[in-house]
Length: 107
Length: 133
Image (cartoon, rainbow over all chains, first blue to last red):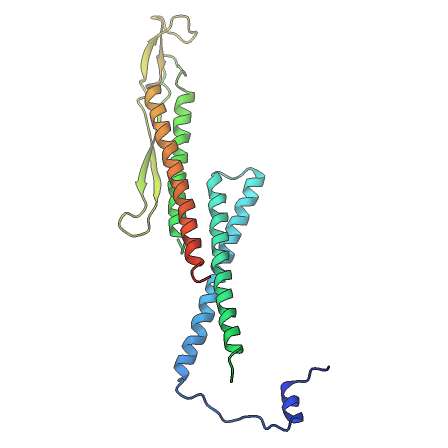
């Protein structure tokens, strides 16, 4: 079976593409706010996670080279990084779940 | 400071208690370090703790500074010591071993309490992440 682009599929099925439809009751401001809100939240979270993991990695190197002053500095950084990773994964899972729910919606 | 504040605040406490234990360790290791009576005795180290930005909501503790004990120490009669003066005295540090051991227990318990806070806070955060799973 070959996979054809959706436009070609519509043409093959003699279905005219739907045009000129604007969603009712949705303002552009709300769309913009929703779009940047979640995206910035997610990217901010991932940035935070990256910082924590970098700190944890640096401390792991210090532990290996003997430069580490405090044992708990590394273990706490590692714990924070793993908790932040769990949080990010949880948010990602929730987002994917919501997307799948919408995709499974009967029209 | 971020979303896992409880963990980093407890971390600052662990650092302070670690430094306190270092100071006590130094004091105990030098409890029998004597000097000539013409010199200063070994000065005991005391850690001074201070809240970080008290009332600002930042939280945590830090070491404000190290206070030193009495440089005069205490005179000890020990004529067989090669450092003794003509009266047979040497200068010993003014450190009470019993007091140091008591402080060591306090520092150890404080360290453990803060470690416990880290563990509990992590468990609490994980429980919050798990809501609705």
